[in-house]
Amino acid sequence: MKRRQPARREERADRKSLKPQEAIDARERLMRSVGPLDDPLEDGDAVVREFDLPRSFPHAVLSEAASAAAPDGLPAGRLDLRKRFIFTCDPETAKDFDDALSIEKDRKGNRTLGVHIADVSHYVTPGSALDREAAKRSTSVYLADRVVPMLPERLSNGVCSLMPGVDRYAFSVFITFDAKGRPVKRRFAKSVIRSSVRFAYSQVMAVIRGERPFGVKLSARQRADVMELHRLAQQLRSNRYAEGALDMEVPEYEVVLDPAGEMVGLEARPYDESHQLVEQCMVAANIAVATELWTRGIHIISRLHESPDPDRLQELRAELAQMGVRCGDLTRPKGVADFLSKLRGPLKPMITGLVLRSLKRARYDAQTIGHFGLAAPYYTHFTSPIRRYPDLVVHRQLADYIAGGSNGSRGRMDQRYLDKTALHATVREMIADEAERAMVELKKYRFLANQLATGQLIDYDAVITRCTSYGVFVDLPEIGCYGLVHISTLANSYVSFDPAREVLSSRGREWAVGGKMRVRVCRVDFAERHADFVPSDFEPGASRPEREPRRPKKGFEPKPRGKRRRR
Image (cartoon, rainbow, N blue to C red):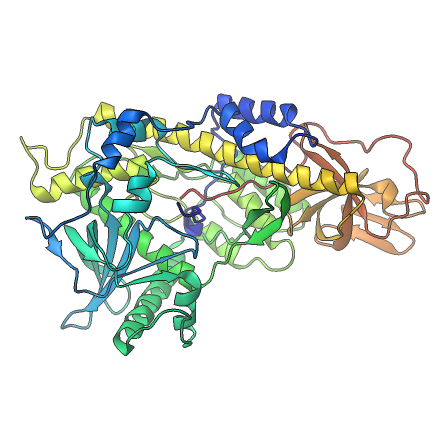
């Protein structure tokens, strides 16, 4: 199963609120029960135990999955798209391909985007053992060393996966855009596709750059289609930002492990035009499905992102004011988008993170619609039914809608079922996020503790994010950590603090928010998830604090960034 891609950047929402208490408690227990001397290969097992994640599929589920058969011919009622140029674009290590793309032009010159999603609903039928287990799990959980999947591999990597050169059942969304990138028509169909090419992101990026992609032979027409999709995606992206969609451009990293389970570093996740191409097409499909069903009076499980809480916005303004940053009106998506677009300098990632944490968390809801981060009145999840149960439910509703329904249903489902499913999916997503974050924290603090234990200290570039009377807090982008540099280690002479300017100074040197410095770890509190650092040029014998570095009250210190992927 492929590593999950980051949540579409436009859809990011705060993951530090509305967490189930059991998930918070589990993470606290985990960090206190697992120490730096434990076997790192057992970290994943410890996370699975503490968060009560499923370890295997029941026999009945595996039996149903084993009986799933690949398409054979063209069933009645399905659109035959096997001769069209349709391709997938995923990470190089991907095995489950749940979305594919195509594009065509009509006689007026309008472009019709085709988004083809694995038809999981064909294999996972309501009330089956597969369905009950998928509903219970609700989401796949992506840990640093494993995946706890929602569906068995026979489906996710097999008959549902849109592999190249083979027939696969799909649910296709067709959206026609005019010359300005405005949607003018949409239609939906169950289909059979045969993916022509399995692209990696790097190969699509090579086509966009005008280069020849390694390992793939393309005709001139196929290259032209990829470029047309690229141009459309960039147009859609510009349109959305103009309408107030948020561009949460925060650097993202993935933990890199060695064979012994030890973290050896973080790998930056690219976010180039190839990723934006796929992202914008998926967002367009989600909006099209939500708009079609909601405007027909059909309640579905929406992806809700509410407007920010006024009190939290006031706290954000106060935090930004301490940095000398004016933010303007953040009550509207356009105001937030304009503010983020003007950010520059080393503090941009941190400020973007602060804004992100001030927003409410996106969640599932079967009665309320609207997505603040996307500035979209209608939004749902439709494009990842292999790993998200709400997508599967929406697939069933859309299929019933286009088929005309039975007994007058026409896509409608019992409201109590939708409400219950939306709530459960939200809770399971939060627990998955906490489990993923706990795993990353284990690896990061084990990584830092190992440096101290072996004496092989690594120097990191750091950005000062806050100055206090007892030291500076720094952000280490290379490993995604925050930490404290105590005032006693900054200089050999007296260091004074100017609270008005929020600046520390000593003999002509100053340390202020936004300043850069090189640091290395000096202390790790594994259980409390705290790390202290010292300047790289610090000499232990030159300055000796009389006590351990004083820490702020609970809730004051910036927390390490967690992994964000959900969209």
